[in-house]
Amino acid sequence: MNTTLNKPASQPDVAQNGANRVSYLTPLANILETKDGYVLEAEMPGVNKDGLEITVENGELTIVGHRAAVESRGRELYRESRPTDYRRSFELDPSIDTAHITARVDQGVLTLHLPKAEAVKPRKITVG
Amino acid sequence: MAFPKLKRKGEETKTTSNLNHMSIIRYQVPQLSNWSSFDRLSSLRDEVNRLFDFSWPSRDSGLFSGWSPALDVFDDKDNLVVKAELPGLKKEEINVSIHDGVLTLSGERKRETEKKEGETFRSERYFGKFQRSVTLPTAVDSNKVNATYKDGILTVELPKAEEAKPKQIAVSVS
Image (cartoon, helix red, strand yellow):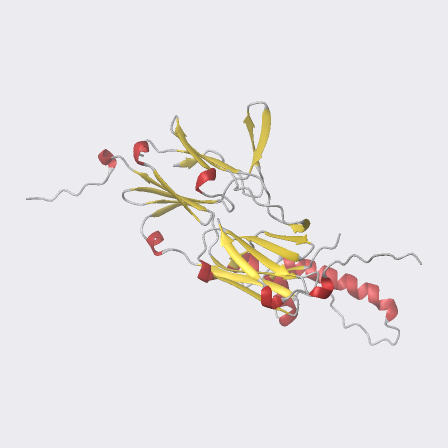
């Protein structure tokens, strides 16, 4: 599984979205391969279940996270966070069974389980 | 606009121990009676030293042993509001404390045990300890501080002390 968009999180990724240019943050991600599939974790603080869009198209997985609306908290004295939404795409390995991808979000971390298709799982054959 | 002073962990270690202090002055400053002429020079020296301290952080400074979560500070007349982006922690892993007008957020993110089996393809997330401190720009009532954690964002509400709240004073015409 490769990341097709591979920019550091500090640089927002600018994507073409119709006529408007929308800038996105690239969420930090960890990817792990297990014997049954892949586990992808992406950090998107401020995003809950309702703000997530996960799509698979042409072997490419795209995750978009819209921040939940927050009430204004008065005058800004200091700011390090960026109020932009998140977006990142990953090229999927052909062995991934895209029909059985599961997703969960907990305290701003999205966890995707991407199972491998039955045919490519390692099989142990015992000699009788 | 007044910016609260933000301290990173690395800067704090400088004041407590001089072990990692890199000095670029090779000679001892002579003991002069006229200190005022040296003031500007010594503050420049401090600035340069601070620069070196920051560019070459030691192993135990914040840049290596932890991460520095993004912090925002807001002022809404009656409260100071401090927000920190801390995705994927448990409530118990976050510490909030106030001492001498300095708010400190600290904690540790532990690697989950499920990670040990399997091959890592990409590892960008930070694990380990973090600590951020904010010198609060006004006095607060530390007994009424409220902290909530939602969607990976910690929000600390600090009600201002009575004397720090803005007051409207009516002008009377005699």
